[in-house]
Image (cartoon, rainbow, N blue to C red):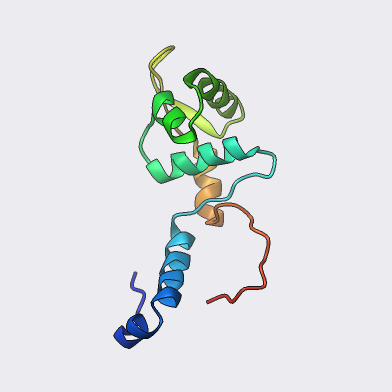
Length: 123
């Protein structure tokens, strides 16, 4: 996929071009998050979607800046809710990934979070 941007536009309006590119990329790397989830759970789904490879509780706790035990509790809740699945490991050294349900919902809607509409200009 190509986003055509004229070179003079880049020179004359670099900020506007940057916003255009970020908005364009955001449409393809985003996923919908249920309103039932709190901010940490929503961020876990975003993290998992961006990774697209199995991740450990330690990697996620570093990203969230929370303790590993709290992160494990959140991961357990997300697995029980069907948002994540255990990819490998039985007890201690588990790897997690998006469940089939999360992948299907995320790819179908193609949004990160429902954002309130701003009065700003849309491209």
